[in-house]
Image (cartoon, rainbow, N blue to C red; front, side, top):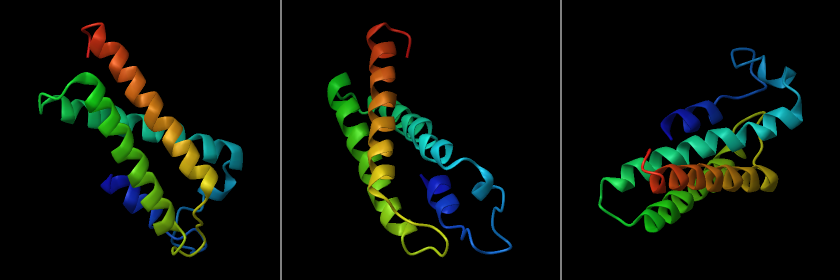
Length: 113
C-alpha cells in the first residue's frame, strides 16, 4: 500500500517525474489497476488468514480494505499535479480486489494457498 501511495504521489507534469508513464496507452494504464489491486487483495487475504478468520470473512475484508484504499488513493491523486482521480479507476481497483480475493479463495479451498 505504501508503494502504491508513493507511486501515485509522483507528479506527472514535472520533468523529474516518471516521463515514460504518459507514453503508455491510456487503456493499458487503466487496465494495470486490475492486477495491482488483485495482488493487494491477495496479500491481504494471506495476512488476514493468520488471524484465524473464516475464508469468506478474510476475502470480504481483503476486498473491502483494498477497494477502500483504492478510493482514498484516487482522491489523493486528484491533488497531485498532472494526476487525476477517476471513478473508472475506482471501479477497476474494485474489480482487481475481487479477482485477487477470488483467486486466493480458490487456492485456499483447494488447499494450495
